[in-house]
Image 1: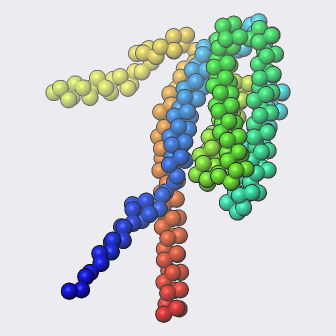
Image 2: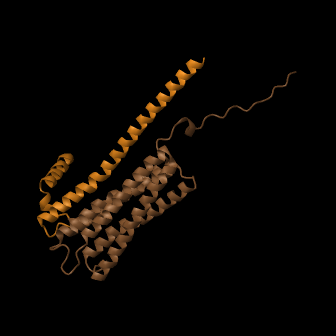
Image 3: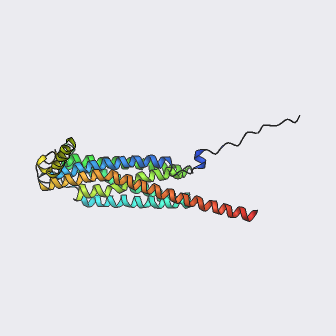
Length: 199
Length: 85
């Protein structure tokens, strides 16, 4: 009697193999996070607008004026950082090594923004604008501080991405997720700048 | 009867919102404050809807793009197969 050898049946293609992913898990997670953060900033801006509209004078008497001119430079650095990251993403799709320089430029410009914002804060505190000095100070540090916190977190993520790229371990999904976070930080700033510093 | 009463109450509430003075931040009653309240209420209401609509539109577009790409790959593979056989 001929002996039949049993061959294992080919494994059925998994759902992941059969169906291409619409967007990486990291990007989806970051998208949900960014949406919730957008609502957080919308809430803060709404509160700020109502308090400002109710105030007889804004900024209140005896409170320092915000340095809109100096912050315009920071804003330009942040926008340039966003543009640089955009070019890094484009370069990564073609040749990952080419993304290194624009990614580092985005990181450096983002760091410039955070450092100069810190310098501005020190000057404002010396001039008497603190969290408890007025509603103006409270809202300023709450809104701009929350943004700065996001900027620092996104910078850490960008630095991590740059390190992964240098190790040739950066996945497209990771770069996309980190970029989404940085684009949010960059995109929300002009609205905050206009509402808090200019309007 | 209850429905009619409910409709009348709702309608009257909609017609005289100023009389209600239900807004906690509208106390001072300045025009600027009233506009700020209306604008921010509109913003907070519309923003999540717009965001979700935008994300849904973008995902749909991405899905269609991926479908077209898969179809293109399939037709290319079929063409290669017919050339070799």
